[in-house]
Image (cartoon, rainbow, N blue to C red; front, side, top):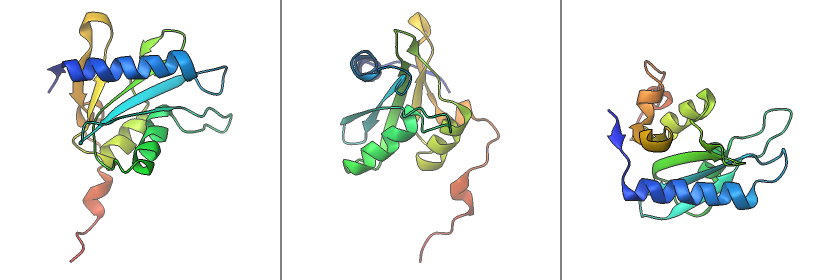
Amino acid sequence: MTTQTRPADQELVEAAAHVARTRCRGDNHTMAAAGRARDGRIVTAVNAYHFTGGPCAELVLIGAAAAQGAYELDTIVAVGDRDRGIVPPCGRCRQVLLDYFPAIEVIVGEDDRVRSVPVADLLPASYVWADHQLDAE
């Protein structure tokens, strides 16, 4: 299910774009992400590029959110430096986002086609890591 962006989604895009413009420098930090916690807080992060791969901005954001006590995220977006705009998450990030936050919305698209979609729509027929875990009794 695809939904049109809400004003809150635009606020996330603007937050990520601001971080991309002001904090991404050189080749080590080329992407910024912004996520909205369930309590309304916006958390931002940048990637940490390294020739071994390094974590994407979305993954750094998950850790930054947890460090701030925001363990539930509702929406996330990534924006590239040098005014590249919204960049959809890579496959690894899609899987991690699905595993951590199965109901999270991901902002994708460009210009007048920006929309918010459930992460499961970006990773159809996927393995759900949480499915193998048993509830603690």
